[in-house]
Length: 205
Length: 141
Image (cartoon, rainbow over all chains, first blue to last red; front, side, top):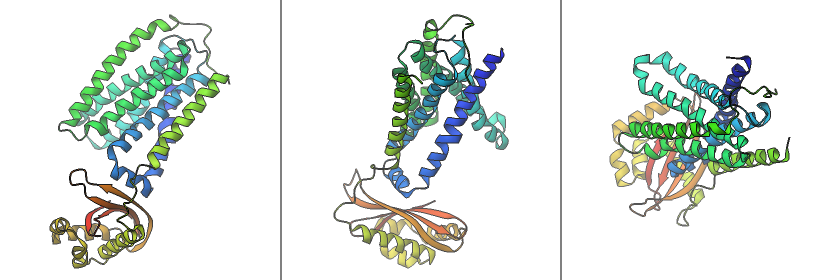
């Protein structure tokens, strides 16, 4: 892997770290201290659950967009750029979630959690492709909104499906279906990208 | 930055603000006119005081029939043990009140979320009252 690609990977990881642990999670923690928020959550658990789910989409997709806009110019690039950036983003999230779990639970008992993280990493790659497609097709805002909607809807599966029996299987099954569809879409999108390496690409830091 | 870039960043920032505005408020239902907010707040503080004093009879006197059945001596002992792990009660730090309607019975309730500070930790109580100011729900964490 070239230095440029390694940088894309770490920019993806940085994008996750800024958008979630450094920004969204402290804001959510602050809100959870408020009795107004807790009252609203008590009275409207589904609506607030969906709003929290969509906030992840707004932050993560918003920052993916900002990284592409300001740090990964020019807009036109090869397909490997969103894939590697998305891998960096997804793997950083997986490490943040799984490492503490591996420290207290044997790896053998974390099969479903590991599978879910693999699906989540693939989803992050495909969502990055959606955001990047906006730059390729010069419809940035439209594809940003699309990525936020997909991300928020997938996260909303948790509050929506949790009340049902066998909700874990339902949620993971629905996630797997979304991931398969998104993979198909991403492969279809490959045609919007510059084939192979492009010597004109540069990374502005 | 290009003009279109500024516009999109502006839209993103607006989306974030809207998202959290939705999260923070405007979602709780107004308290029905059958309740007096000040009275509801005082009643919630009274429930917390009774729990702190471990006054089981006092709590049961406030309860609806269903709640009285649910708050057995064993359940109340567990509640007192858990709350006493927080140490000495200091004050109610924050309180929010709203109304809600039970979708199956159509009955209206006042719901209070109160943050109570104790010497070691802070507990959040969720307390609900019927129109007759009977204690209809009690939850803490």
